[in-house]
Length: 444
Picture 1 (tube, rainbow, N blue to C red):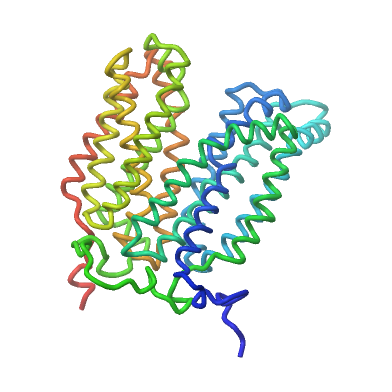
Picture 2 (cartoon, rainbow, N blue to C red):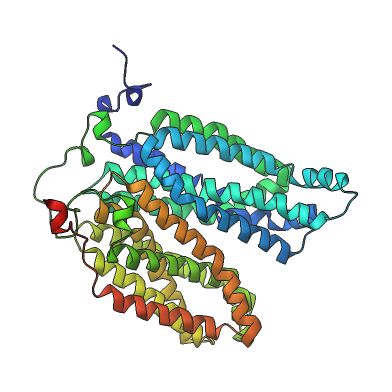
């Protein structure tokens, strides 16, 4: 008798511990491996690319923006493909493709020179920007988008009662691993050159991660003859109205609900604002009478607050309503945007740090647990994919619109006040949020 694909090369049901914990470890590695496609991972290669391609920062930023926006348009489609084919084949294909993109990027300057030679050296900047945009599109779509979506969604399907705990452990890995990547990548660049560093990452992801995915990724516990949480039974404090959806919702059904858009726009607002703040942080502080050193110092205490809060809120998410977590996110956003509007040395800086810590920590909870809690697991890839596409688009637009605010007014106060007004509007809208329910006509 032919063995099912999910029992090759071994049967997860025979694992001495609940296989969901193996899935959690593998999924966390998958999320960490997305870092070359995250802004924090790309940042280490910025200066070497400027020198190699002879571009200025505006041209490089434009290529990054276009690549990011292009990826945002396709991530929702990738989520549907994940729902159809599962975590292992989609994750494997994504890892191999990302490795190839990283290897291709090691030749981007040589390719630009070769293409430019065909046109007699004309259009050098446009050719370099076009090739770099394609490379950034590949990194952002495959890394920040698909690999993160598949790895996180897979883990969320293996847990229900302990979903918050599982998401919290992924959050710890991200909080510790992502900030460590720039110095590690920089050390590789110093030792191997930027080509060697991207080539090494291509090998680690295209070969190493793809093999790990083939061995350990599994889509759902049911396909492996198991139950979510390992069949955990007993009294549960999370028997609240919104801990389990009344059914599994499709993407078209989910996006017609009020709750989807309030949660989705809150996450988009976080990505829009936090990316813009991080991108312009040095100039923001200089305009407020503070130096670069002071600007860089706000991230570490904010990260400490965020990590602590993420662990606590992830644990609480198994026992409380999502609405309360949404309120915490909006309070953090409100504190940070209000502090930015009045930023000066002293207590506004503390207010900014606290707001950043709250919104950063709670965001990690919302993006992990919201969609399976509200809409079920069957179409999780499509629903989370639409959300991810919106979040990526928001992260691309934020720095651009903040720079326009600075150009028009000479500071970032207008941008901060607009963001604050959006936060207040979303908080008011969140007061009416309820878990979506099947319409009576659908039940008959």
